Image (cartoon, rainbow, N blue to C red):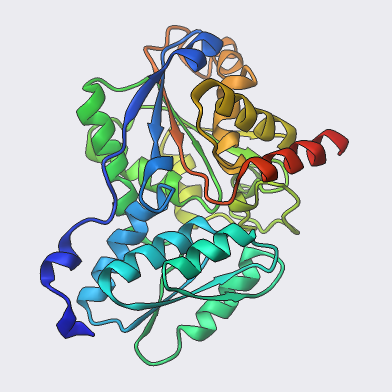
Length: 329
């Protein structure tokens, strides 16, 4: 396997530099210039390819023969995509309720799929077990320094496109890998003073719970429809970021995340999953204005960047089902 790889394949990044679009519709809602960092157009459908591609490439150079990754969907697709590009086998372990389109996509990338447990945390235990096999390497979906280093490339692109720092960066938090990566990237470009608005849905709010407790805590279960935000415990590094940077942790209801997903589809003709809808809800639910009114954000924001993190586990039918579910809850 190792011989079939030119070194070039291992060194070339798997992610693409994504567009930064000024959104007229969201700027109207927010009353401030809103830029969208469109990670939903990555080859794997989400920002995860930045960090996972970086980590997978590094492990491939060390001679790994088989990758295993536990995932709510997006991390697994990124790992499978990078593994296929490298000609290395991959096994992806997902919770039992994972959407069929994610399973199909993974099989299309040539990965072996195992469904295990009710939530990501249980799938993760299975992946750690598999990784004990000879030559197998576990690729964690959000908790690894090389992942954060890879995700930091997103901020370098923001710096290149904007030149001057935005008034805030809005992102969704699942396990906290994107938060840790963006924080690292902000330091790298000298923008560590830029506030990060960390959005979660209630029922998957492991970061917000950690901040309230003063340490990472484990949620009893995941009750949010934003399954891709479904880690019961946030990465320790993400929690530390809340103490080192200006991180504004906000929790929205499922209905706000799903409504934001629908409005974004209407406004920008892009369909993203509710995990991403949680970040968009910062604009659509009037949260930015409230944070300004409360003095947490500058009253005269130059611009806001919303990271549109992705959307693999959604289609029009699923969106209709989610809307019906949250309107009855």
